[in-house]
Length: 270
Length: 270
Image 1 (cartoon, chains in turn yellow, brown):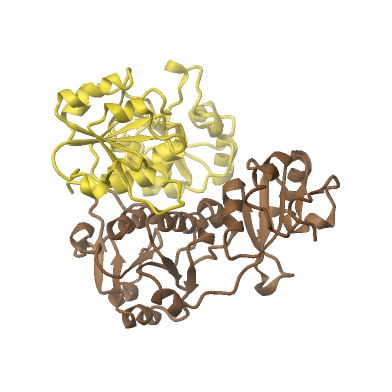
Image 2 (cartoon, chains in turn purple, red; image 1 turned 45 degrees about the horizontal axis):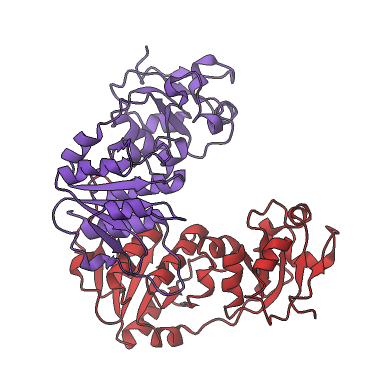
């Protein structure tokens, strides 16, 4: 296979070598792939750089010449093809005009064992029923920025590796390790067994105000539920403490990723 | 004029009575209106309720029957027409299918005097160059939730009353008062003259970590710049203190509305 320096020019929209990049708006479903799920797709120079630095095995790059050149350093030694096309050919392969001018695809990597992830984490986010890909991506961006070491996902969450989540996370979903919990909320015992304090974020009036909850010490996991219904009663009861962000009267709630950021900052060890 | 209880059925897509709701994707520019700017447009039951409760004079409602009925209580006594159409007619007037099923339009209201706003506020957000309508809307939502009393906008900011800002703010842009600063950053003296402490949010390493800045006491204004360039040097120098949210290595920044939320929580008097 050519190294990235040995670029491959693509002028034919139907060239099968760029099939992994074809019709991106449907790329999250790939019946031909294990589990029917799509490849990991990174868009834009910064996110492609994060993909290259991640544990996901890059298969290929595809971009306009200028963007591929910007990636020369990050992609040095990466033994995959770099397909180069003009913006028009790219748009016709991908299915829409791509502002960011460069893409990379990678295979999925083996899933992370949740017990292992808990063991090596000081601060965790635990997500229940976060179905919205943008909120999920934004939560990973905020987790990465504010020093959260890992994310645990309950069954009701979307796949963090969906294209839109990767993009909204600015690629941080590729850096912050995550694992799936099978039994919910029983698997929260993985945290209790390790002595991690579990704080459930809820708007309930009887919950402890965030700034009084003492989350800035020790190992802490923050439970976050989806924006509409919030955490289930079972999840709140399984936590060690229920915590609320004090809010003005007449305001329903913050966006879940924003509430996550406010809470992550409160426990940040950075 | 009919009260809202006396609904007006609309079956003709070209009916001039719903012209204020026509072709909404272009509704932010209205050459026929003062300043060329569009009416205030609220989408969805919750945001329409907030518009009705606001200082903006409602001109009319337009929705499918079910949504208009949901608004009966909020609109009681509101002396404007409520146009009712089926979803198809509505979509053809508005220009796209409207998930939320109801709209309201209002006139703009007289601008607020910035000195007055400063005088009656304990906590303020001051925005420099926030051009993105979604970020602007999200900042107002977060300001409302976390007890910020008012927002000051420098000349480089977008209009908070643009349709998308209103929607993303969940209507809180209609509740949180805002005013425009003419001279930037000279007009920050309005804050200094009132004894309001000015804190500039910046990623600069030499800035004080947010949790050590003591912003939870007294009157405070938080300066926020746009997501890419951040605050200008002039703005940071005009502040009393430069504050940073500690962030993990390799992470550029938080979204500006998210950074705002983290900061507003730190100064919240709620």
